[in-house]
Image 1 (cartoon, rainbow, N blue to C red):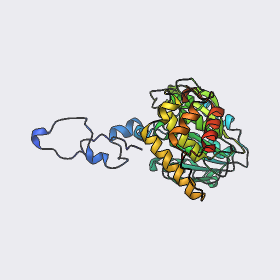
Image 2: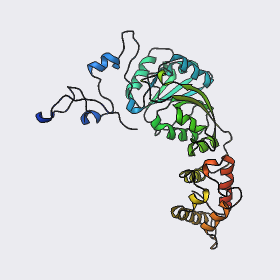
Image 3: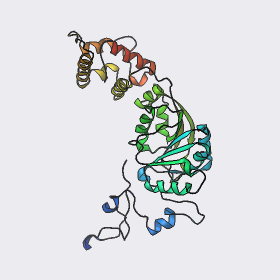
Image 4: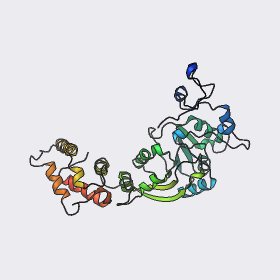
Length: 343
């Protein structure tokens, strides 16, 4: 996650030679070396602390993708979509200033909040201090992608764009299985999760997400509901893992999907008949034969198998951008049957 660019003030700037000293708003490398800098007096009066009405105006760190949801009606609507039970354990990723955290604490048994920004950790702890829900909150300070997740029933998150994709893949592979996740993403990313074959946004993420989970588009959230307003609109989606999961080796499945979607508008034959791909498949064939104590058939030629499979009526001239889940499952099974593996 890229660190924010912090602008220096008169007290914090490094001393420049007289020849180059001039008033400038250029970023200071010294100031940028730390994730968070002490706000200047101007920032403090304009939003670095509390406003005259007592409302928290802590400055969002847009370098970390922070855009605080400020509309209480949107927060209430998201909470309704989660259908929380009093016995639920909630995982909240990126609680920010705690606008969502407080009602989550009131409606659940426990909230485990993962927050990267130490300023936000202090802010959420301060909001719950001395309240009846204080004991129900557990905060983990760290990177949500690198941190090991505990057991939870429901996941709630307003996700920064930079970590949307790895976060979804981590969510899909999380065990033990959870009941649902209600998450807010930038609109284009959210639409990718439910894109269908033939649509411009249909991609590897679409296929993998729909294989492992049921995804529903819940609501659109305008940019003016955030502070500061982001450049794009947002959407809230609900993700429910398929239980039981599909009977497929996901590592090999993803190996094939990743390969085919590198050039999704090319024919399957064109994608698979490149020299690097053929070499990789030959190595995989030898590895699987050795692991299973099988003799490799000297007559088994990867190129020949690719020609045979992609020439079949079901896949002749087909492109990954137009194939659905069943097509991909059948394609993988056909290759496996002939000794071709993608992992």
